[in-house]
Amino acid sequence: MIARVFASALFKSVSRIQADLRRDSNPSPLPANGCPQFGQAPVSLSSGTVNRPYHVVDGSMTQPDDHPPRGGFARLVPELAVLDLEASLSFWCDILGFQIAYQRPERGFAYLERDGAQVMLERRHGVWETGELLRHFGRGVNFQIEVEALDPLLTRLASIDWPLYAEPEDARYRLGAQKVGQREFLVQDPDGYLLRFTQSLGARPLEVSGTGPAPVKVQSPTLNASCGFSRFEDDWHLSRAFDAGEFVFLSGVTGCHPDYSVADDPETQFREAFKFLGEALQVACLDFKDIVEMTSYHVNLRRYLSIFRKVKDEFIVEPYPAWSCIGTTELITEGTLVEIRVICRRA
Image (cartoon, rainbow, N blue to C red; front, side, top):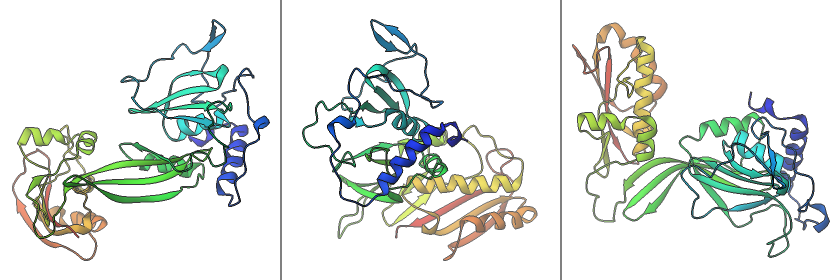
């Protein structure tokens, strides 16, 4: 549905730029007379996201909802020269999820923001160009933008068949005595600027040769806050994951939501339990394949065991971990049918 909001003219512009991005030929400088200059007619914004009414104040076009970026101006904000501001705004806003804080259409300028990330786009005018400007723009630099989840971005990019520069992968980077994990992919915008979108996977202690790291509670404020499960840690004084170096111990996980609600349908509840378990594993930079032992506690064990096994097999694959299945009369939250506890070993 997102792609349908683009005008046909915009699609032609984007298609032309995509062809340029894919072309493997020697770059050539942009002709000085081939770009818009100050004083020309303002850019026509036809996309649903960027089409905003404006009125003239002291000879300048302003929007009634122009505002400073939420949270204030960042200390470092890149300003990117673009060839087609309309195409760039549609890509950055409709696909990448940025919003226009304010703009100056008569000068081909827009200030964008998304969850604390800020960037300025300006129609190329030839000022402040320290050398020959070649396609693709931004060579030698990539812009890292952290988001809560990559999947919505990937879905929108796929919906308009936009190529990725680098496919999604999990990466680990040393930060002091820790290794910080993030899922990331790279994509070029219509002018070729390289953007690296990242999703936090949490941190784990760095093991020093000859010694094991001290046991620590696994911390991932971004993921915990987005999932809402930090409330469980506060209410029950527990750690979702406890890192002992080679092994990581996870607290029991149920299909209970952060508001303590649970699905009435057993299959839905079991699937949500494994989904929440997967999120807890991500906090520790782990996956289901890292599980070496699993214990599940069941209310009405025999009645729902076949459904549980069916759902389990969607998440747990070979080589299978050790598994103990125990029946019990009740669990903490009313209506909860299963609690899953796992021990993981780092690869």
